[in-house]
Image (cartoon, rainbow, N blue to C red):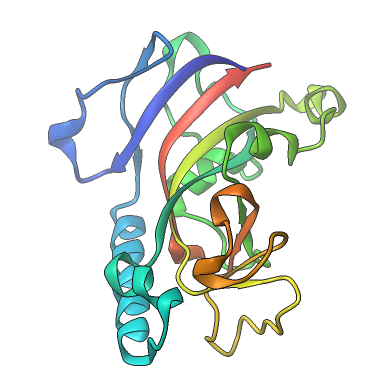
Length: 208
């Protein structure tokens, strides 16, 4: 992958950070802004997960939940249709089908049946169909990568009875041996149930 541009995502109230720049593979870009409620919802949800684990924790699998909500750094790849990254632009658009800009501005949709987060940028990249840019070239579709903080909470695994409505698990891993703290979460796809659990921190526009 060749990084075209990389931005930190900050709350739109963090005006003092407006001039801050980050560096990624020699490419430097300004800060992109999201709605302050996204960060507030994320922090509120993390505290709820920690409190639930403290009340119900009975084993090793709950230790990380009690400490920090079992927070991880994960990747999520999606598409965008605007001029983000063009000539260094960090402007977020209002197009209805521009997925990346929509997530940065408003967070992940509660209508999604779980949010798939990946342990590496390449795994996230190949989760999107290979020919998506060519197929939707007439709509100027491109892909970008979000680096996200994720409150994994209590993690279930394939083979366990998972009901995302009953509150027993906060996320689920599709493959691997064991469950919860015993599952090698960093090696697998992690499906997060609550959209408040995923906070985009960086957006990377890239080419392959």
